[in-house]
Length: 148
Image 1 (cartoon, rainbow, N blue to C red):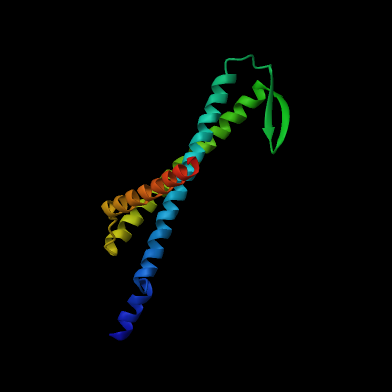
Image 2: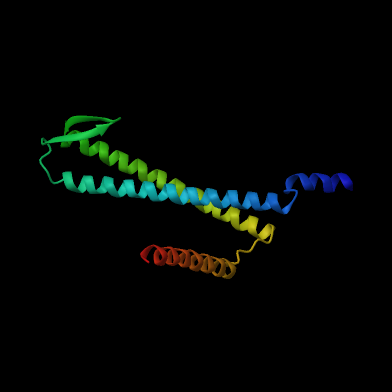
């Protein structure tokens, strides 16, 4: 029986601090994925703006494009398909990141349920409110002292 509980102990973190570290790591991963999605969605938006700006123009018109840090001269006819391909590729990456995000969120929810983790937002707000007031008081005191 001791060996069964010992093998079960290997699967689970040994103490609360290890559980907390794992939980914070999972939340950090989610945050990083959100950040990556935001960045890539902004790039998709920028690609769309470029496509919409150059699409109605004459296809033989001169166009400049940055490739690997080098500005090259091309025509709109050459650049437009490349920008469209890049946009499509970015959209695919964003789609995959959303899938990964959903898996990670599900994993985090299961982790929270397994270890009965609850986020106490009321305490965070109270503590955060006190900290903000403390910071504001410090700034006001400093400002009042410097103006006298």
